[in-house]
Length: 206
Figure (spheres, rainbow, N blue to C red):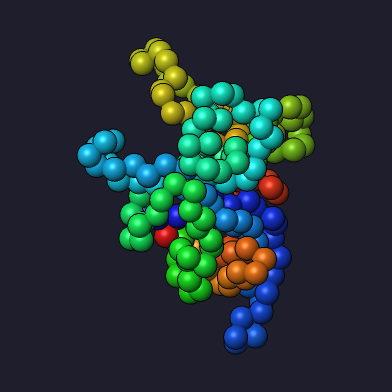
């Protein structure tokens, strides 16, 4: 599906036309620039390669710099491909938030969730813990409990919910409503929360 790259600003709340207060996420979608046009004849599929957010030229290697120069754009931090654009674009063209999205429609947003480090089963999977907090209980309250079977099968099953690294994963949240678009400030406001920390990059698809 067609889409754009944006940057998460943060969350707030606004009132809708019925006076209901709804939580929203503010996403800055500055102009995306067409880096390359993929065609079926040359690449086997049709897509647009878009670049977002300027990067210092000295931090760009020579092959990538040549790729950006060919399109006539400055080096970009994020380069992503989207398919399904109905309008024809050429390398160097600018695509703005109001060109792709309209208020009231629904979008899917992909990002990298906040990393929470190594966490136990209570925080990571919502376990209740075992035993009780008193009557001689020493250090079992947040323990996972039994993790395996007996002599048969003599192993721990794959996929067992255990302690481990939590967060820092690629997450897609589907069907978020576009509440408002502010073109002059390049802002897209969607209902609900999206993955990632403030200033994290997001892929927004129709």
